[in-house]
Image 1 (cartoon, one colour):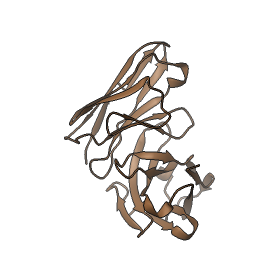
Image 2: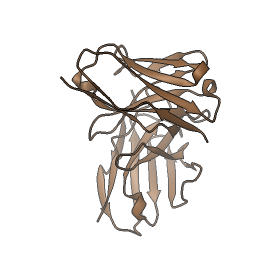
Image 3: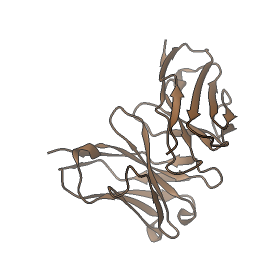
Image 4: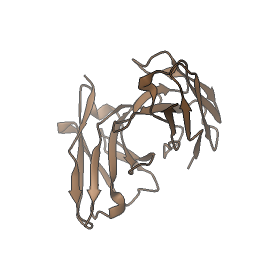
Length: 119
Length: 107
């Protein structure tokens, strides 16, 4: 079964760092782009960016450029989203999703990781 | 960035009704348009890609149409499990922007 399994919920303080994960199974991890999508509480979906695990090429939305970092470890089929200094406004649900090859739609989604940043 | 405008933002409908949701990108995107369903507390699910292609396992009461700057998601004969929020997304260029969502509620 093709699936993405994300790491569990996190509660952090402003200024702390964080790295959340997205582990794939059931397909060739390196061959598909992985995207990250933010959903703030009660709000819609925001496209943060994508990473190609084969060579770690990344494309960030201008809204998120410099605010987060994507990475991937092919040896364990896992993608990561990290922050160096969290803000309260980073409080949100974060989804990873596989980008389908031909049409670039997100066809497989992780279950989401809730990040709460509060002092 | 391409802006995606969905309408309506919300609607109330009854089981068995037909529902149409429109999505208008701020520039032409050919057929690089997908539709997603998100139930409360759940991750989004892909319904339609390439504007009109039904994703594997999605019921045939869902259909998509359009190209360029005008797209429609149609649900014929609304079922109880269809009450959810629906999003369009363009993949013509990065960032792959989403519409603001359309919440389909029970009348």
